[in-house]
Length: 320
Image (cartoon, rainbow, N blue to C red; front, side):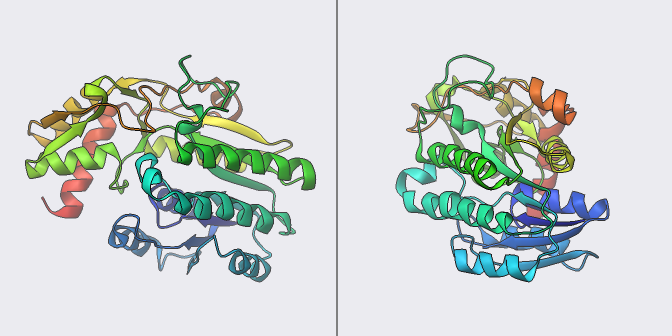
């Protein structure tokens, strides 16, 4: 099977591409290698894939839709797509809104158009986000909840991507599954995410900023569990556009998450309590009944196991 993985040099994309190669699939990787965070980390991930049997890579910006279309014409053998490339980060969207239009709207449309004309395509799995639930107060978040009140542009673009995929299913029969990820962390994680930011600051003896005075909860989901869910969605026969939550099904207090990092790092954090930031939400918590039933998704990694693995990777990679 030939699988196109967009965002292959990204955090989740790298792990998904590796898992696909491990089970013998052919993987075509795309990534723009942009400078939203240190491209050296992206290249380090990519270096671990390059040279493996069955893997090929092309640097390509998905907002350049003509280049994406040309790529599709050159690779009619593609049978599955895992579309993970996106402009991430709620806070970045406050100051760089057009980055999200280019990557999350134009990029999503370019991939849908590519998929529409691939003669052998059986399934397109794409990344959405728990951010689409906005300020919903009913917990846990269910895919049946309303998602028409986003609190950030990032969330709005991810919800728009879901609607676009649904329209392509109805118009052209494009078979697609959207996955709403909940605070993914683990080795090779993104430098703008809390696990990375907190670990780096604690090991360097610098303060960490904790918003809403620490009164926050997150459904932290370990990368191995996410990969299992992505592959299960990729393998599922698709007859209708479906959306699933992929979360750990636990709303962990942020301060406890920090305590687990402190223990793994062997150092106490210097905490600076801050008010809530624009675009942020107080709590996330995934209802995974549908994804367990349909995908066999059963997250197995609590933060007491996953966080030490991340800290160990961080120390080794950055030699600290």
